[in-house]
Length: 153
Image (tube, rainbow, N blue to C red; front, side, top):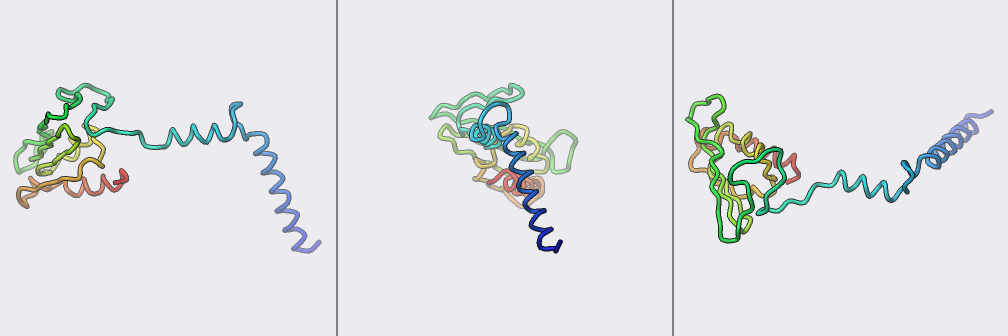
């Protein structure tokens, strides 16, 4: 038997085995393949967020309710000192407007953790203002940049 025939037989057997496998397992739990694909896509697609509606969270935080069109909310994400302190982030203020705009004023060291804990999608954090170039005011800018890239921003 030549090498060409062996390769042809091997490919044929592989295709037959693949077809038998797919035939037996195509519909999974008794559904159909398109239905399973739709379920899989729905499970893997990112959820839809609104910039002004409250999100379901694992906890309740004061002032996390929906904003009206003429309202605004100021959140202190960090109020700490220039030197790093445990459990206290440096300067960071998040201003949310009822029209969905979100403004970050400063992004001091440790504040990216606070922003991530609030579960705000990075897509909405596109207006960042730095008061000056001290690390207690821009120390976590790199974390916002990398976190945004990882989150698809």
